[in-house]
Image (cartoon, rainbow, N blue to C red; front, side):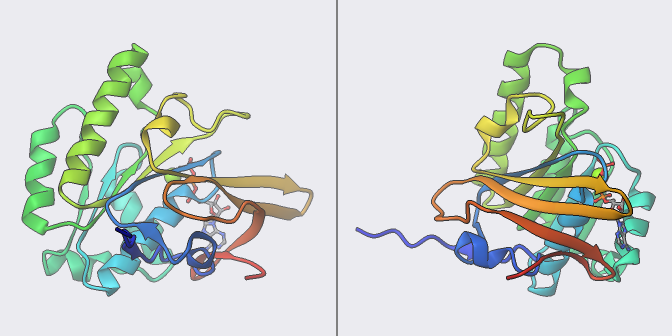
Length: 220
Ligand SMILES: Nc1ncnc2c1ncn2[C@@H]1O[C@H](COP(=O)(O)OP(=O)(O)OP(=O)(O)O)[C@@H](O)[C@H]1O
Ligand SMILES: [Mg+2]
């Protein structure tokens, strides 16, 4: 029996072509990168793409306030407010790891198809030992997958480590690394697909740019 993988568009121009058409539906993807690398913008574009295609979405923010996220989005012309009024979108400021039930209630009510958790880096401050951290994350990822949602998690990248906590990259189906190296007056931004289960993906480092429409993969 051949199993056809269902995919959803990432919303990042040029990226779908590098991963056989998009993220595997129902998968969990980690967006890893240093500060200012574009993780939040990536997530906003991903949710916006879903809303345009009739897929409700939820943004769970653990660092920026919901007002800040709304402003970040408006810069690129993503007016989430319209979808919020229609009951298709919601920003949640609460920590899903402390009160998961409440958040699942919202996810079920909205019939959310796309979920973002930005970011999970602070988790290590709340949960100190690695084993329970890993279990909590795994539990969360599983519950979200059961609901057939496609999940993006962001994590700060420190040096050569893919993620701050050092456990999350093994729990997810895919890892995309965003890089930002300031080179004098020029900014060198790039994207790299570190892992993408069930996908024949590009193994190159791809230059990207952030402009008024958001992130775009160059030379595609
Ligand atoms: N309109 C714009 N045009 C070009 N570049 C922009 C624009 N808006 C933001 N940027 C760039 O994007 C960066 C912010 O991206 P983003 O907030 O997604 O980063 P992040 O990886 O989430 O960072 P953090 O770890 O601090 O949350 C800014 O520092 C700036 O370099
Ligand atoms: Mg951010």
